[in-house]
Length: 435
Ligand SMILES: *Cc1c(COP(=O)(O)O)cnc(C)c1O
Image 1 (tube, protein in one colour):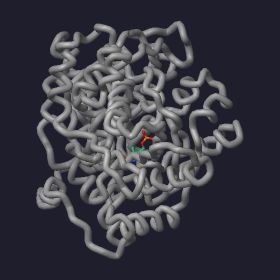
Image 2 (cartoon, helix red, strand yellow):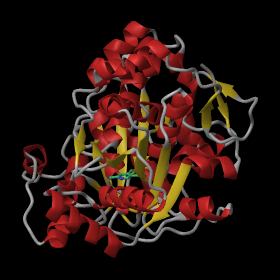
Image 3 (cartoon, helix red, strand yellow):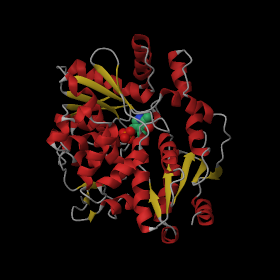
Image 4 (cartoon, helix red, strand yellow):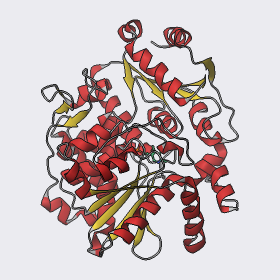
């Protein structure tokens, strides 16, 4: 399998190149050159397969031998010691829980696989790399956990001081070893700018092997398609068409669902559900794309004004707006609607949702009301509610349980390097620490 750049179709890369470059040199995004189909035999029996068996089959179909099947089996066995269960909430309404990984957000599916694949290639080449990543919360935790103690890889995470939740901060700052947390006196945008400047700096990029772990990397996108297959496997016995509602920010998750479809997974429709950062729902409604500065909301992992995977999303439909509207129903909700949904589902079904999950729930509800039909609806739960404990408890007016894994973090001392949002100081630090 080769990958091409969305800006220059003739610019091709192998899987290994696409993963380590992260972006093609022309600043496009890598896309698979073709979409090999999952075999009919496998689909016919998919309800009897485990998550890991499904992951191996999907990756093997897509990679076409660049990593052998035996190697993939090993790598997936190590990457996933957690599952993606589908849970029924009310009648004919299901939630796909993606928060059972080490950082308790769905980004674990991408980060764990990416770390395993990078490490696979590094062991072969005996190279060493330095991952730089800026986070507004969940990405940092997943990347820290995913790359923790992976040989040959050092990770530097930048986060905005005081702007991530306590649990999110502890996930970044308590691991140590090959994970360094830098606490920036500034915003998420400042963090992202420092990382971008580091990649553009010729001295840094000539001295060190720098790599990115953000969601535009194809190695984070591909594994996110595994759980769409796995959810289908769990619901196939109901014998109805399936609609997935995806709470979206950068649109990596929805792009992965579209990849699964292209590979032959029979799905009826997607709902693209956002908060007030709604450039994509507005595009689906009007055909005009107008990215905007991001707006702060309570579903803050989706506060993205200009989604980085939009180009990919369009490319799945040959850049044709009309075709996109035939597969994706777009909608968006404000904070008050989100809180109300959290309260209602808690009261009616005794189920606690994080705000992002609530946006997906609302999206599915609106789809049922406006489009209707006989289908099985699944909304994606992208984070454990306890990651946003203050907000969830304030909204529900009740204490909620914290899983032991998160609770124990609160008692560990954080270790971070504090810095102003200043590139020369950041560069100095990298020069003294990286190797
Ligand atoms: C990152 C994130 C999202 C948004 O996912 P995208 O792939 O960027 O659309 C939604 N919910 C949570 C909890 C997240 O961490």
